[in-house]
Image (tube, rainbow, N blue to C red):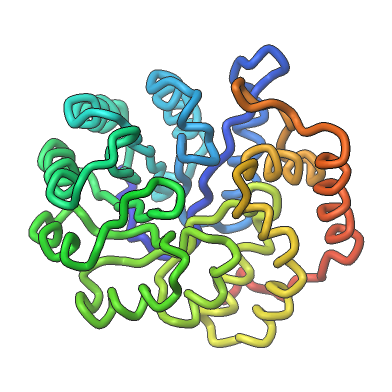
Length: 305
């Protein structure tokens, strides 16, 4: 087992499909290998970008097992838990741990907007059901439930709740968490367009989206920033920003899959009710991606940092 330390870049992997909506295992492994080669620090399977809303838990387990075949021994494979009931979340945590998962990203209950206490009890029940490390996904913009500092105060008694995917879109929340808890929880930026800023403010890592198309650029920004080479990181980040903005749109899955298609490590196929991009929208996103590729920067030697 590769226990995550929640430092570095963790791609929220895409789930590639064939035209008949079956999972394209070959493309999944091709993208995963590109991430490993670029130097990412772990990966997440079945998150929002991985189309958690349309893939089955048994498919997540299958992808976990495929990923384990090529991942280095010390490379953590994280599974996402996005369930509507506590019972289902606990059951999947146990099943995934038995199947070889190295940790979990844990969303609040889906569909029902639980109150603060209900959300905390849900998280505690899952944490009590597994020995694996857990990262709480805090995204009140998309999922309508905010995990407040007072809620984290209640969760800190569970030693395996170790990190937070910070997607409140309020960069000052990084400082609030650090002021309140010190290093008790690792903080990983969950919004591509805020990554440089949050890393400069002390975030420990980056749960990245456009990394699925641009793994080297993403890892370069992280490593350069953490090495104090801020000007070099900012140069790449400014080039990257128009593409990173594809991550904050309701159709981020289609947009990022199109970007990965352009870079040769993905395909545009999605699973209904999502539909492929067409017409003016397709042309607009294509233009953003091709414009960036036309002036793609030469990267410094970030691997030695």
